[in-house]
Image (tube, rainbow, N blue to C red; front, side, top):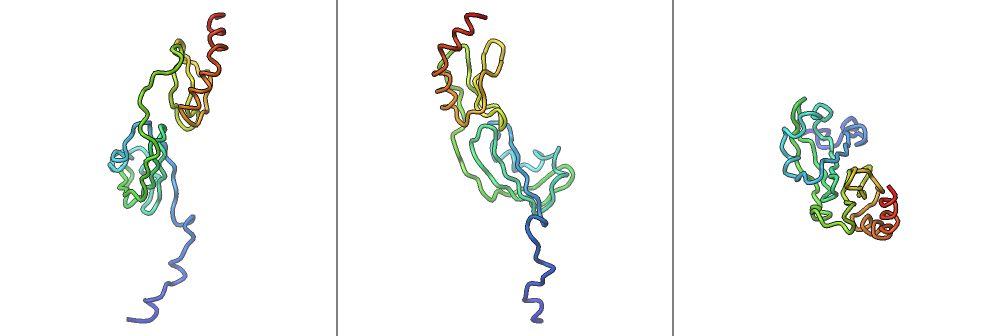
Length: 152
C-alpha cells in the first residue's frame, strides 16, 4: 500500500455547492413520504437530478419535513433514500369552520392557510401560517364580513 493512496488528494475535495444540487419540493397536501420513495413518482422531473443531489421536502399541508438523497436516477426515475423525516403536524383533517359561508384551507406555499368564501371560492384573506391564525382572523372579522355579504 503506498502512502499516497491513504491520504486525501486535493482533486477529490470540492465545495458541496459545486458537487451537488439541493432541490426544494412541495408535494400536494396528504402525499405520504412512502410515495416519494417510489422511483416512478419522479418521472416528470427525474432528468433534473443526478446521484448525490439532495431534495428537501415540505408538503403543502406542512405535515412533515424530509431530506432525501438521490442514489441513482435516469431521465424517468429517481431512486431516493431518506436522510431525515420529521413529523411537524398531524395531517390536516377537515374541520368545521367557525363561519359557515367561509372555509379555511391550506393552499400551498404561496397562499398558505386561507379564508375562502364558499359561494364563489374567492380568497378573502390568505397568507396565514396556521389554521388557528386564519380561524382567529375570521372570528375577529365575522361581523364585518357578514355586513359585506348582506350588502351584496
